[in-house]
Image (cartoon, rainbow, N blue to C red):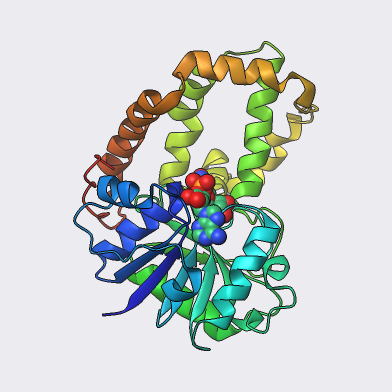
Amino acid sequence: MAVVAIIGAGVIGVSWARLFGAAGWEVRISDPRPDLKAVADRDLGGLPVVLGDDLAAAVDGADFVQEAGPERIEVKKHMFAVLSAHTRDDVVLASSSSSLLPSAIAEGSPAADRIVIGHPFNPPELMPLVEVVPGPGTSPRTVERAVEVYRSLGKLPVRLKKEIPGFVGNRLQKVFDDQCTYLVQQGVIDVADLDHLVRASLGLRWATIGPFQSGTLGGGPGGMRHLVTHVGSQMTFEIGEPDPARMEEVLDAVESAYGTGEDAYERLVDLRDGRTRAVLEPLGWPQPPAAGPSGR
Ligand SMILES: NC(=O)c1ccc[n+]([C@@H]2O[C@H](COP(=O)([O-])OP(=O)(O)OC[C@H]3O[C@@H](n4cnc5c(N)ncnc54)[C@H](O)[C@@H]3O)[C@@H](O)[C@H]2O)c1
C-alpha cells in the first residue's frame, strides 16, 4: 500500500488525511499538537493512521509527502529541510501553502527538484481543485507525479506555468475579498447581503462556467469581443481599496452576522459541506469521500 505522510493536522491536514485514506493510501500524520490523538479520534475515526510528532520518523519510507503546517516561511523551510533529508530521492514533497513561493520554500535545499506546491481549496476532500505550482528548480518529473497523485484522488490538478505570489486562486480571491471589504466599509451593503448577492449571481455562475466562458456568453453571438467594446467600455470607474485601519468594524459585522467559536464553526461547516456535496455530482465532479464521523 502506498504511504502518504501528512505534515500538520490542522484544518487542511485532517481533510487531506481523510481524502488520501479514502483513496486507499496508508496515512501517517505528524503534528506536535498535544491533542493529536483526540483530533484523530474525532475527525479521522476508523482511519488506520499512524500518529506522531517526529517528522523524520513520519516520512521515513513515505511515497508522497503533503505538508500542511503553519503558513510561515521559516517554519516551512525548517520542515522541508527535515523532509528532504529523510525521504527517498524519488519522493515528491508537496506543500499546501496558500501563497508562499516554492522557490522560497526550496531555497538552499538539496531537494529543490522535488519541492512543489500542491495548493488545495478548503476543504481539500470536497473542493476539486489542486493548484500545482513549480518553482524554478522543480523538476518536470515532480510536477507530473504530483498531478498524477492528485488526479488519482479525484481532484482537478491545474498546473501553473510559473510561480507567482498567491498563485492564481488566492490572487483572484484577494482582489475579490478586498472589494467586498471596501463595499462594506463604504456603507454600500452589509455583510449578509453581500454574501447573498454573490451566492445568487457570481458564485452560481462560476460554479458552472469560468469568467472567460461567461464573457463569451455575455457578448451574445458577438462573443467577448462584443462584451468588451460594448458594456465593458463603460466600466471605467475607480474601484477603490479597503482601509486597513477600519478592518475592525468589518470583522465585528462578520462576527455579528455569523457568530464565532466552536458551535458557529460546526454549523457553518455543515452548511457549506452539505451544499457542496449536493452540487458536486450534478456539476460533473467525482463523488468525494463519504462524510467523516463529525459530519465532515
Ligand atoms: N485554511 C485554509 O483555508 C487553507 C486553504 C488552502 C491551503 N492552506 C494552507 O495549508 C497549510 C495549513 O493551513 P491550516 O489552515 O490547516 O492551518 P492550521 O493552523 O489549522 O494547522 C497547522 C497545523 O500545523 C501544526 N504544526 C505546527 N508545527 C508543526 C511541525 N513542526 N510539524 C508538523 N505540524 C506542525 C500545528 O500544530 C497545526 O495543527 C498552510 O500552509 C495554509 O496556507 C490553508
